[in-house]
Length: 357
Image 1 (cartoon, rainbow, N blue to C red):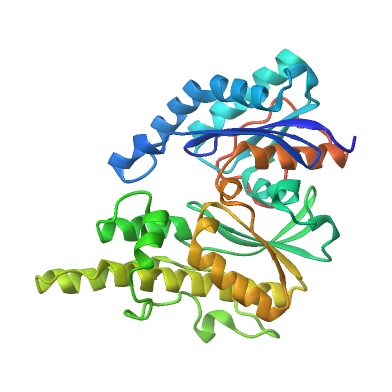
Image 2 (cartoon, rainbow, N blue to C red; image 1 turned 180 degrees about the vertical axis):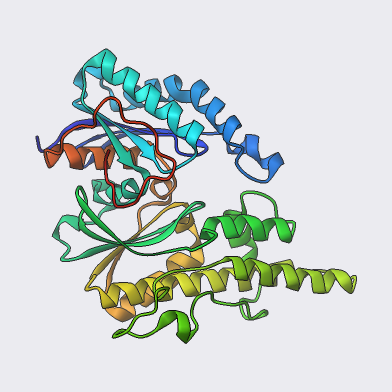
């Protein structure tokens, strides 16, 4: 089956996303977000997110079917995020997907949320021909994950090259935003503030870049391709405290710009290094933080200098959504991968090496 029609269901965090694809053609892309309900708390509250998924599941599904102008009878398979993510949120999506599969008799695929961010790059809407890339890599940067992957096969063989050992980049953005009183979510707020600031005003650390962590190409250190953002967050906290102790105005725009430069610098440096040393000639950038203007610009600059191709999906396909789940599901169906057993469970800590359950 070369152009299966697949419904994709995504409920790993605070967005209820349902997308429908036919092969590599996007037919529907519907998202309902509960972000506004979390703003008062400065972060996602899992129970609130799970309740929102229960409320929004059917309306979003109906909207997606209407947008695609199809019925459930036209669907060939259903795909749902099985993990990683928030346990309660994942369980709502998995339960809903299982109910649909049983009611319709359609095969069901429990897929990896992280690999789905890569799958979205194969949609026609993205405009990249990733099937003809010699060796594809993926840089995933989000609120919960910062990882560099080597994609030997999208549907069966994904290799983890490096990841964060503490905070994810998006998590660091949220924490720094709270420190400087910028609000939630931190990513877009700091990105906006940074445009008004000086990125060299503060010399913030680039975690895990010292020689003892990096090693060299012949004897790489264990953290050569890994990231750490907890020290950066602490450095920002100390900078803020210095101004507070002196009862001085905090130069929040300069802090935002310097923080963002540190994040983009270390992420892109290590990603391009990993790609160069592992024969990767094309990188897909995915995840919510892929919307960050400085990360996109610096990665574009550095991949071009290294002779590495780059694909960045449209911003609405970078953040969590059902289209990416459907896209990966369609690739699994096309490659004749067996559907998941109906007794699979949501897995909040699902390994990136497991494409489907």
